[in-house]
Length: 509
Image (cartoon, rainbow, N blue to C red; front, side, top):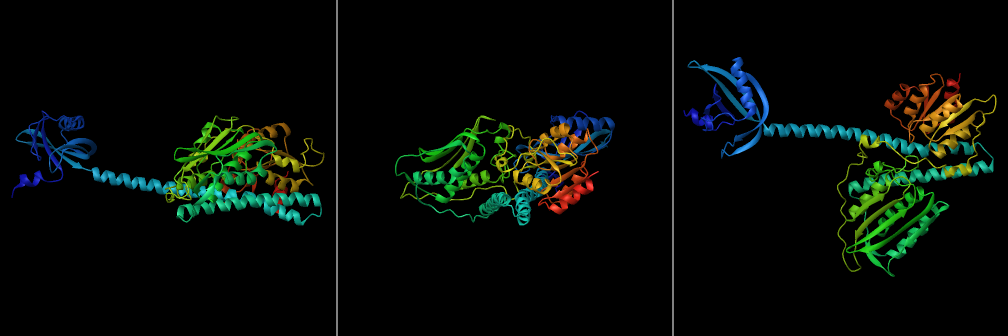
């Protein structure tokens, strides 16, 4: 039997090295060479010095290929056996190619990492959906009950307005989630037809104009007369209305201008405002799901991601520019220019993150730097809160960033308590130091500083004041976290008036 031939074609590389670091045998046939690999030199020298073998070690080195013997760099395991033959010392090196094993290990590790990330994203998605659904639902259920208990026409009108506004918000959330689900399943329909762009712009203007704030001017820019293209009218309107609604929300005064222009083989649309602007650290996150320009404003955080998907499916691009806080914003998108008589490219949904992949936990917890929150327009229908508490009535501080939810708390508590209001966690800490309320209702999810951090700050100076957490999250882990972070109790949204009053009574000294 030709053992030399067997060794020559075995998968492992076998080298015999003497004390001079000379290769006296190589099953690939190349002997008489000195070792030149630093890793092998160190391993062989140490083994000869200590007169002992060494276990397999992982390394990366150049070795000849099994078939054509050309050198290539591979991942290897190297094992050394110390031996004495004819009174001379040798190290027998067995070098095994583990490149494929390592690649499989990396793929396995990547699969595990993806599975863990998917689980985190799923949990984050469910928590966000719980919060986004329960917030308007809290106002709808709470004010519906209050509506049944009053004959005052002014209160009835006020409660109905709150219910209607929050119903629209809940409907928008459901529509947005359904749109995303349709996008990912490929069932969101696109219907191409000849569209007069000037007529479409004027139609969008009439829809959005009622949403513009009193001190803001809305302008639109038209192209040449009778300008028609082939596109999906409904989807194009949906994107424009979404961008303009955002601009109206974040432009309390100044101007909003939108329109289009032809650029080579595409149509460029723009929505430009002089509003509050967008901090630079938030700009990269805007088109991710559940990412919001300003956490102090109501909204699902889904609209921009839907716009991005629609435009990219229509083979266009979308983007934004902002100089930062207080410097306004420009949102833009393009779609291919398809004239009547031409056939548009078939809409194909782009690859996107799964529905549960809203955003990374890092992005969700990224620091938010936003300008001071303007006094909510809702104050127009809410009676001002007394700053000087009346005697013999406990003072409750309500830390709540949502106008409707605060009004609900006020309606439930105003007959028995003096109420002071903080619009965010940072304001809650400052207001507590100044006014020392008897009890605090602390919303968990607020801009600037959340309820956990605000409570930790308050507890540094006062460990006795009762603090009741108000949460729109529903997981048992959230409840455990609440009770472990300095709160005396909690109530979940939708808030039940009887449960709220009961918890307040339990916590009162």
